[in-house]
Length: 419
Image 1 (tube, rainbow, N blue to C red):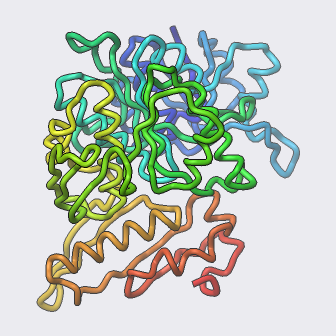
Image 2 (cartoon, rainbow, N blue to C red; image 1 turned 60 degrees about the vertical axis):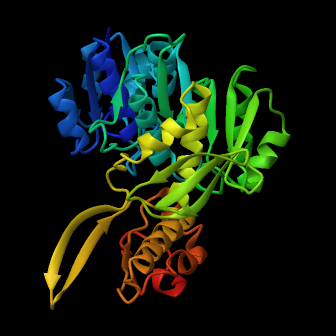
């Protein structure tokens, strides 16, 4: 089969492209500003990339056009379509499908899908879970919205391990909309047997009016989990309790709160894991922050559902190397008898920013370096941040930094006033 992907350089669609190529399909694609690192990764796989959305690409005559959610029916100032290829597809009656639907029909069908949803920590928790299953010898497939350092790739098909009823596939389950013609959240298409609800706050202000709308989408996900499945839920989140109160037909395992099934005791970099009050393992690693401790509990609870003992999961996490752009050290410079270390982190929601910076502060304090300064450089890049919806939370988010700089190009709101 030949598929042509519109919006191929996005992290999700690029992962779909890699999986399709690995499965033996001919894959081509287009994007506006074909850009690395995704463009380099795709070309290395033998995928032909085309700059822009010109209607002439209709002549490729693929078996299926796969449409990313970057594509819309929008018009430019002069009235011309922003995506002329999409208009040509519609006019010609050519076959098209969304990325999540293609993934369901061609990759996920018949597998045990483990889906990780939540406002924060999806990429990291998905990577942790994939690594736990890999270390257990289960050879999972996965699709992650980043590059797990333990694997060096963002997606692979995986294989069915001996003794497994179904092959396993771990997927980062995004609540963002599927496509311009399908406004359901992407994760509704994945039909998981194991669903992780990591946390839930208001986000994506460009498509959701309030938190209740996002809670409804999360409940749509819960509705798709079979009775023999498991929903792993953060016990600290009232929003997730409201989601489950709308109805749940599967086994539920909680983590995080003092009365949860899975709890952590100790510092974020060295903690004991308990299952219903009984010690089942210990995690010692280089990661910082309470958020990563919670991510670990979620991954351990999900892996337990497919037969990986919590102690084995804890041992695997000791070797977890995190994800690119998650507190990734980009370099250290010696200056004036001291050192300046530069970290790169993807956090964009105020809560994620706060937990990340606070985690670094706690790490410094624990190492006896409480006198070291943290200088935060923040770029509002998500649609929600660009809209200024959460600008009032920024001082709280950056409270653990000694000094903060905000990149303000393209903002319609006054960052200096907000800070």
